[in-house]
Length: 153
Image (cartoon, rainbow, N blue to C red; front, side, top):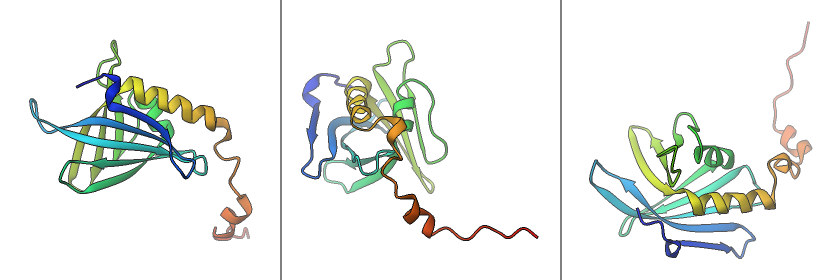
């Protein structure tokens, strides 16, 4: 996997979102890989989620919403359950991490460069620290859709 900085692009989107464009690889087999463009997008309005759009040349776009904490933890240790999992590929070097995405009976494994993703995630935590992720939630509106608590008899 190419780890030079030319495959990394940080920018602030017109919406105020923080975006990161990376060239990553989809692992198809032991010696087969496919180049994939990935755009990670962080919105301060929903700081617990990172939107990831994947584009294979000549193929359709796929969008996943992944927990920011899952991505952060996956740089250093096994993270996630079920459909989305992430873990470092080599605990000593920590140059890349694996991201596995599953949907139904389909699964895809991607190799991500750790340094640019770690730097970008650090910038997201500077914008909205983990302790402030829920500060903008209007709990009155959120609770309005909840069913009433069961009555005790």
